[in-house]
Length: 294
Image (cartoon, rainbow, N blue to C red; front, side, top):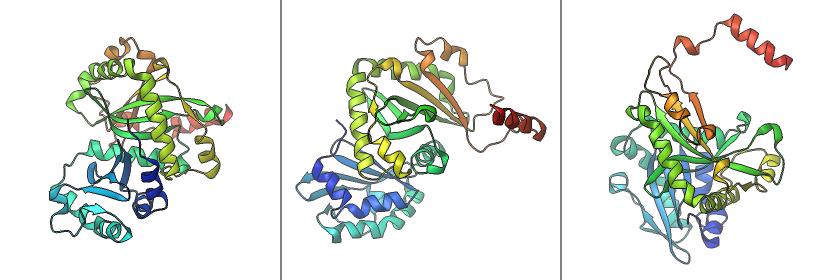
């Protein structure tokens, strides 16, 4: 089960590992993900640190040899001094990722989605990401999160789990994404209760570590949320980044035929521009006027 021990959490909150947590919170290029008694720190989708609790007050360091080449980073973190060596080398680790890492805008967008929803309180998002590269059986989800409807937010609510698949531009897999989502659903169905419980644990531990940058009032309410364990309440979200609206790759009819089609959401985003996505002032002004009247 993905979770950290109380000792690990305390070390990341106020012990000699606290500098790592503070760095992730301050640096929008980084994300921290909770695994089964270890954490990963990601930059541009590449892990620049796997840190595993081995024995009390000792944490094993695992960094790809290409990224740590020539850097003075200890094999274990045992105190503030050893942790500080890693923190000092983060800029150089980033440079090595740029030179030697796997580069994919799709993976980078995953991290941008995490930032936009978890770390930008002005967005007042309704989706919060709890994990990335979440594995269930043979299936691997890009992102897992929750949906918290802003129109009815209150303390003590039960919220829906979301499994998010990100596709960038004209990814060749888009034409078969209905089969991909079907595989996700079938993998989750027999494990729905356990997955919800694990997701809630990760969410609470991330809240404890300060990994959601929201208003104090919203954070206090988030601490009281629970996750629905009913798969019929889960959402399956397809995020299409810079998808060309002139393309025929996306087969919405195939998605609509899935038995859980009512639980599927499609989100279009990105920065590439087409005529269909650029609204003339007259029509957009009229649309805003209608919204203001409602």
